[in-house]
Length: 384
Image 1 (cartoon, rainbow, N blue to C red):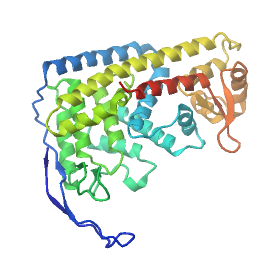
Image 2 (image 1 turned 60 degrees about the vertical axis):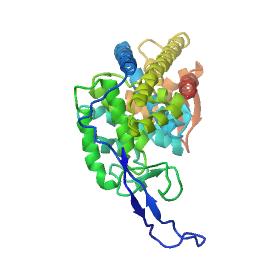
Image 3 (image 1 turned 45 degrees about the vertical axis):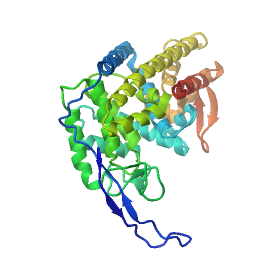
Image 4 (image 1 turned 180 degrees about the vertical axis):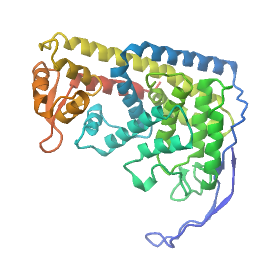
């Protein structure tokens, strides 16, 4: 990566308090072209990436027969972990309440739900990963923040670190005039079939973060792009591997690897992805095992007839642990007026707790499932 020298001349005269705006030179980055990159990596790094790739395929195959409950949970968990890297945190209960039709949402939970929509868009668009797909992912991420032009590349300067100007910033993104060409170059690299898949995905992600094509939401969109590429390259076919949950275990190493990439060394970001994948799969397996155990434990306390929809509600709770009557109608076709017939037995059995989420909006939650999801997040956030 190289840099340009650009004069910063802010508009608007004096700042509040009478201070003059800062003038000077800043140094926007110029990403290296990677469309024809010969990716040379140490043998150990390639071997670790290959091992991690096999683990992804194995994990995906393990859950093939139980895709319905765990695909949604893993995708939501990946979305929450990706948001947490950006210091956007919320409890599983807050996220569940934010997903309810007609429910009240806290700001962070609302943003995580938007990130889940971006992950869904990434998977849905994985057959053809192009600029339009990237814009669609960003539109989903930023849907509730129109200040950052959801679904449109930036037309202004962005920077990381420093102060109110890009002068002296830690990193300044490329001039916006370079974005379209840089994204086209990235897509050309991502479409190649002669590069090992996981290293290709790691480098593609690092390049995306270097291009920094949006005013906000670059990290979350870039990690959604990872999920699209995992599916596009055939490493995953049915579930979302929560790679962000692995990256979250050591965000300092992740950000340092991005810096090393910009300095010309791709090995650390590939290593970071390989390590994150192994951690994420171990954590994901624990999550799935815990959810299975919870669901099996309910069989001994539910007293409904075998053909009752109570059992369908119980199954739903493993992937949607916060429910209301409207959600049951949408997901299971249960009329809202009949919802209590199936929720009350689960409440009596101690599986559900009733509360409210806004005026006249009765809500039920499964504390056992919510605790399991929070435990997953806690394990993902541990360092070391």
